Length: 189
Image (cartoon, rainbow, N blue to C red):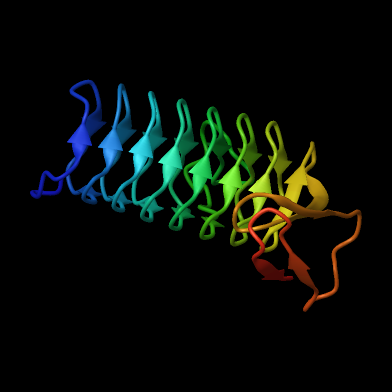
């Protein structure tokens, strides 16, 4: 574990050796962080979060209670992961398979994943994308896309602030510029 203790780890949490934890991070009740994981600055992990071996987590990431982040997952800066989200890392899991294949997943800067969502391995969730609660995400999600459902489908686009920019059924043409009514920022699709 990091020698510099400018972070908080609750006494019920279990942090294995060779874990890096950034300044200002808070790791709460019953969290388990496995060997080789790297956690950025100012992160918050709620109760019973599981962070697997060699998982990479950026700065300012908030992971709510009972989330499982398995090996092969990278979570970039400013990401929100709601309660009970589960990431997978193998397309063909078997209890006895010794030759399982690790499939990587990336969650890009500023994305939000709603409660009880399942993220199937091998995808990228784009910058500032938003996944609605209870979704099964099995395909890539583009920047600023709003998706939800089982399976998750494109439902619209969201601003940096999270406000819905537009509701759509089909993807917008690349280069489309949308302006947020709430914060007045523009987003180029």
